[in-house]
Length: 389
Ligand code: COA
Image (cartoon, rainbow, N blue to C red):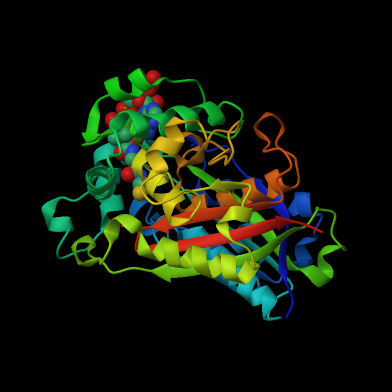
């Protein structure tokens, strides 16, 4: 079976954009195409992720529209929707299609607009995002996504003694990393006191514990390893992609705070790659809220269960620490245009493993993991990538 690699990566700045979705996606896609040195007529499929465009922009059937905008009309195209794990799931399918020999060169990515540029303010966008929670049991109760992750985090605090200060350290670290990422929504240093003094959004989360609403797009070119040498872009191997789901609604999950889907997806990805968590040099994880990062690094096996908070406070997950987490700034500082987030993590892994990211470079990194959650942790896609041999 062929092995998949990424030979091109590109993304827009994450933040506030007044461009339509097709322009945003084209910017990311053309950047990935240029990076790979691939010709348009070599691309034989488009796997595209957008989660909310049908609601936020009355824009559906996006895959062929975007292919046409890029001059790729005619090739098979498909759109994916898995809440915040939308484009990592598109990426998984692209990888599998290349490994199966169905396609040789796939353009995969995502785009989303979530800021008031869509015409929807914070209240309306929060309600739109809540469409990913259970229609019968959760939406009528007013459960929002800050609320979902606040429930999980409160439970983590109860079980392991995790503190608000430890959570705030996640925000401090990721904003610090964001300073070195020119494509991040937020850089700039913040301290623990600023996080704890910011307004409460959903207890225990203050405003500074939350990711922002962002616009943006990301894209990568996935090819078979047999073809990789024929492109300009330095190949980075995709050695494992695990994908699992968990029960919805949240109240029916067996072990909500362990994020079972993420744990199982990580096991699957590590098995495919033939490695364990001990071999990982850095991680990009789904830190939509600070508590989500603490839970994620435990689910990935990067730190022992219950130790996510103390490990973060000790600085071990900082760029300068033993296990850097979210060198890009993560969702917290880089931003979270939901349908673009999954492949943006793949862009960061690719560029880091090539040694291209300057001041936020993780030294000597050869193996990395990306962790992307959808909905109330009901979808998890975990990807292992390794520097090309
Ligand atoms: N992190 C850091 N700063 C933020 C921020 C965030 N998440 N969100 C907004 N800000 C800043 C703004 O830049 C602005 O700064 P300024 O006054 O210097 O210009 C200020 O805070 C107020 O911004 P505003 O947009 O009015 O905030 P808001 O109250 O409307 O929204 C949140 C703030 C945290 C409620 C909103 O960003 C949010 O709901 N985030 C979570 C999104 C989400 O649920 N995603 C899905 C995850 S699964």
